[in-house]
Amino acid sequence: MKKVRTIFVCSECGTETQKWFGRCPGCQAWNTLVEEKVNTDRVETGRPGLSLAGDSEPVSITMARGSEKERIKTGITELDRVLGGGVVPGSLVLVGGEPGIGKSTLLLQVACLWAEKNGAVLYASGEESVEQIKLRANRIGSLSDDLYVVTENNIERIAQMADKLEPTLLILDSVQTAYSSELTSVPGSVAQVRQVTAVILEWAKSKGIPVLLIGHVTKTGSLAGPKVLEHMVDTVLNFEGDSAHIYRILRSTKNRFGSTQEIGVFEMQETGLSEVANPSQLFIGQRAAGATGSTVVSTIEGTRPILVEIQALVTKAGFASVPRRQSIGFDHARVAILLAVLDKRAGLHLENQDVYVNVAGGVRVVEPAADLGVCLAIASSFRNLPLDPGLCIIGEVGLSGEIRRVSRLELRLAEAAKLGFTKALVPAANFAECKGMERLKTEGVENIREALEFAVGR
Ligand code: TYD
Ligand code: MG
Image 1 (spheres, rainbow, N blue to C red):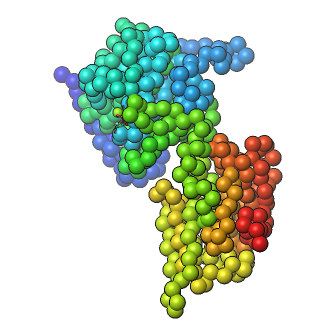
Image 2: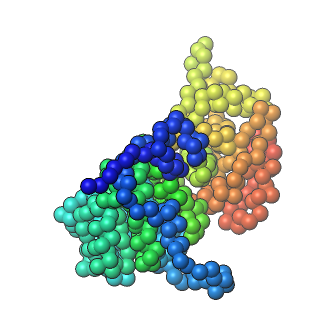
């Protein structure tokens, strides 16, 4: 009989303790220890992820293998771009995202294209029956003789099947539904997720075959499971989108083999996901042509740049009534401050005007770098002058009307250029950082007056 003992594992750093602590002794985070049951006769292989170091010998870096030629293209350009040019053999790629966003659909499409090009692919699902997978494959036309599917949750059995089939790619849907018989805890628990990943990591590295893992995300949008899961894999991709819209964005938050600044854009259609070659079309497409009171700002969400449209509507307030100020998706108090700055520093008198500000698409912008975009949207609506549709606006507005420098300007500009913008209004203080941008014409402004002159004229 297997001997079972209780341990506590930190969901952030993976530290194991015998006792429960309010604060993790490893990473000092509060309330992260969760109870796990483990077999005491489990064979310790050392830290997962490092066990593969084994008996290898040091080699000179100039002699070491590893060239760009080794990357294998998935056949989906948008995905290859995010991966940094294709999948590296033996690497572990984790694809996370909300339920129903299209992770299984994306990877089934990858599986089929891959099978046709490179040979056998094993798609192991712990979430759907083979019939369900077949139905989806029929619908999206992902059928190939070399695509093998199986419904299996046990990670050791999946590894055995993979050993027998010798696929050129292994897909696991999902890491939270798989379990290892080494542990008694339920699938999806911290220890199981870690163990499953460790088993698959060793398999991938020893065979030199890439593995794509699907991961669930929690309510807050982070990947469910321990942070160590993200540390163990080579690449973490996030599949994002909004159920109300058809577009989906693939971003990488970690990539050992490429940049994390690339995004891939897809459209969910009746017949599966299709790539969007020109993403700007999708985003600008929803902007009304020549509309006044509309600007596009480049904001940073966490570590990622996102372009959003700011809309403003300025109308004459009712006689003898207090002017209304409403804002959706942007801080109310900040709008009041910006209106005061516009009044005092730019001579834009809005005291008898109702002002409505809205961030299109239900997004929330908390960054001060969107200030200038909000000011110009308001000015554009007030003056009834549309802005240049190819203009992207970046800048924080200070109380003296000065345009303050923003962080990571290059990243913001790169995103704007990628999405088809041709001009950008940026803080003059940041201007030196724009040197490398050939695709985007940048204009540096010192204060709100200059910005207004540039965007809506006097
Ligand atoms: P799915 O890949 O099952 O999502 P996940 O694995 O991330 O949970 O995608 C499910 C959704 O995608 C479902 O709500 C229906 C939609 N869908 C389409 O619109 N078109 C299609 O061709 C397919 C296969 C799915
Ligand atoms: Mg799924």
